[in-house]
Image (cartoon, rainbow, N blue to C red; front, side):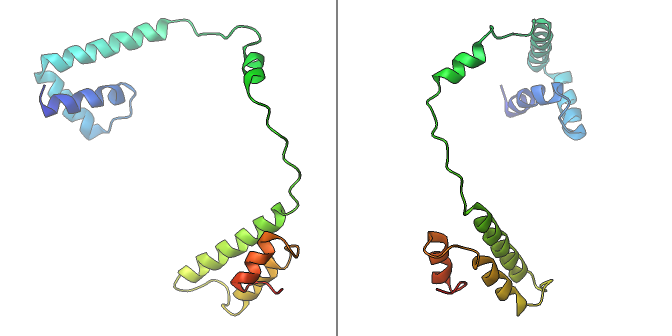
Amino acid sequence: MNSDCRQARRWLSVHRDGELSARRSERLARHLAGCPACRQAAAELEALTVRLAALPAAEPRAGFAGRVLARLPAQPRLAARPLMPATALASVALGLWLGLSLQGEPALDEPNLPTMVATAFDVLPAGTVSRNYATMLGVAEE
């Protein structure tokens, strides 16, 4: 089997699914026209596809989902996270600041941007890791 045959065999299934580009489909057709071994592989793939399509759909037995779920280890419920909104707001503000600072011409006035970021960090409760990190970065006051 040469490299053309190896490539053709990789393309057979993609072609069968209708996802091969027109250019590659033409190249595959030319190869299949001159290669009996790859034509045979294409015929076998087609026959296999027809046989698989004729099989009945598998249906799980009653209670299958319940049995699977019962075997999973119990996951402790996470407590409500009061910092989630503050963290999300800080992430958005940081993303905006980074995005705008990486562009050549920011959409917002630059003097207001640090104020906007600092304001986003002001909602973090004192003593939390997020607040301490923001203080360390200099975007929140102690």
